Image (tube, rainbow, N blue to C red; front, side, top):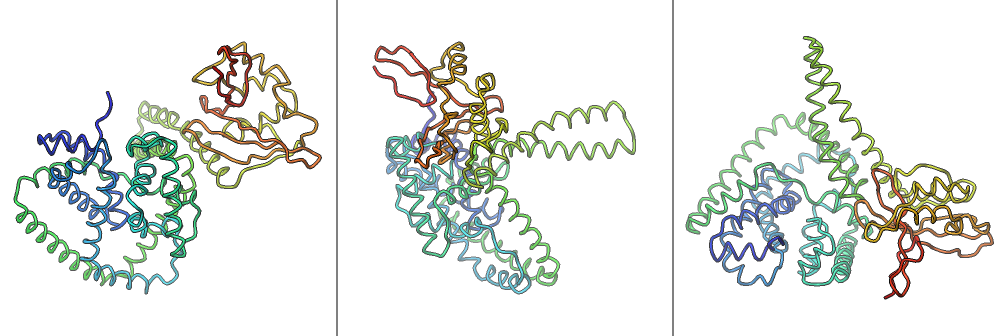
Length: 486
């Protein structure tokens, strides 16, 4: 069953008061709205308040908005604009207090370390998005802020996959130009990496349920009552914050020093996140697992300390078993870090003399090892380096014959003197295409061959494709995915 679109859920709520549809909308977009607010107000509590305000506004305006949303369109653009307006209103109300705090911070932290790249673009990111036209902004929000692939982006925008990709590329370039005009120089690919790694933060647990209840309850009272209550709340909150700020000014020295240490720690965490950005999907999964493992390990350490003072042999053995079970996660993290380092340090090149058998932990390692096996004629290892295509897999005996036939592995040609990876394209979290240029010793330009790689149980392998004749019969195998002739 196809998932209902944002527009369908909104119409269901607007026309028939379907609260489950509204809950689905809130659950679907809470992280997105909360993260947009958090980028602009830098406070989790305020970001939660702003997110609640945006969804309350959505519930109130649902009838008029549903009449204007066409087909199966997404509400990401409307929600981003509403969050932007709410954040601007909040910032106007608190500008004087923030200015005073910032001046005090600057006076005491004159030797603060330079901010990382994300800190350069974060304060202006939503303003930059606001300067894009609706189509470009919608494409970027769906691709990098809601982590949808180009097919999903195309469906949401009513265009083809290729058109969606071109639109995202165009919007990303315009975003880069905006930052360039403000003396923030960063490439389009680097900008995409920073946004993917940092743009969306998980909302506090239970925020979606709180927002839903507040928004649905808010539609049952008059607009005047909502405005009056909200105004009183804002005034009271502002007064409370002003009093708290005045109190904290007395101990500003110690408090600001701790703030500096916390800022440095946050900057270090953001740097590590940026290094992992090219593999965003795998990183998010591993980070979630690592967070659970870290919490579990902290509990085990505390429990282990307790056992040292009151030994319980059976329980201690159980804890040691838990630690052993968690250790394999370290290998996954190390492999992922190696891929990140390879991606960030530039595309490698080798000569026939320095290429080595380095295993298959990463795509680049697997390709280098395959070149080494080809140069040395290790047919058994070549067989272990290849795998059939999932969509149209060749039989096992065909794979064996392909591996054993030296003519299928021309990288060992006497005229080839060196190899260089000239491009890397991620097709999925476990699939990547590396384009290899084989250079000839006589100074010729060489020839480029694309190798598609896939992760198989932790090892990266080269995919071999069927090549079919005009009758559709597979007559040979190739590293290149040639279109079948019918």
